[in-house]
Image (cartoon, rainbow, N blue to C red; front, side, top):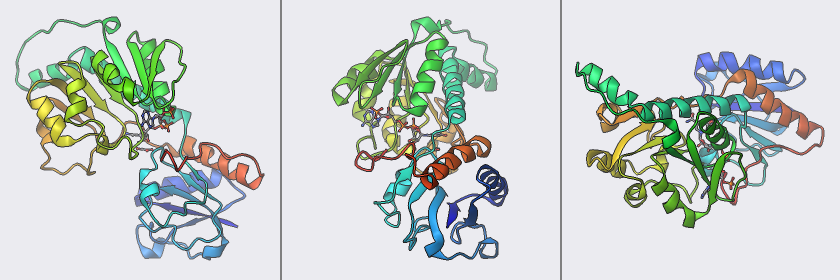
Length: 320
Ligand code: NAP
Ligand code: GLV
């Protein structure tokens, strides 16, 4: 049996990923999906019935069409909302997300940079430098700031623990109550208003699901503390962009650090690019690293071949 790799990789990314995957699973036959190759000549010819595993990274819709023998879909991305929206992804085949400790640490670094920059007014000083304006702001201590982390999964836990280690008071929110050293945890919809209201900085690390889409709308943004900062490192569709712009324009929120957007790449004319209270990153908070992620995928492939339990399976009823 063979493994189909279906992804929206650039030619450079294919050149990095295929050898990394081959090194991690030397006994497997790896084929590139036709629809996902940069051009048709680069694609492997394959017998659909000989494919029993698909390794996917943001594949084009329909890339898994007609693979009747599939027994595992392994995503190289942590977020799987696009796969769950694709009717060609068979609902009965186990779907595993990427869960890579290296990626979690990369996310923790990005969150720490964003929180520290908000705490110490670095985004404001960068703006002042562009305007040659010398103006000192009162320095805030980490220990006097509460940071709320929404989502305490692979990423949110690493972020919460890193922030707590750096002296912030961290409160966390998830669907089910979590236990995390040094972090005050809350769970469920009823707890969200108090969590949002208690923090000077909110970091979003929720998966995009029907329950979390549009979570940061005008009503929820108004629950945040006056002058709070929002750090969205999860998915753009968690935020109602017009509502966030209104909250920033009115000064209700001080600043937003946004790594993800409703439409990516963020269109050149989008007001986020030039908004003085917005810092834009091009979806780079935690990139999948082929060196470590290929090994994570290979472990699940080996588990399937050996009849062992698969890891990091998506619960389709919960959509994450
Ligand atoms: P995960 O391990 O599945 O964790 C999801 C967390 O969200 C869990 O704590 C879960 O609660 C909580 N949650 C889900 N639905 C909820 C709801 N309705 N109310 C309250 N809490 C809810 O996911 P992850 O690996 O940490 O990744 C999180 C997201 O980060 C991904 O889905 C992806 O969108 C994003 N991401 C972004 C980048 C980037 O570069 N920007 C990179 C990787 C991932 P329970 O624990 O109680 O189930
Ligand atoms: C990146 O955004 C991912 O979901 O892995």
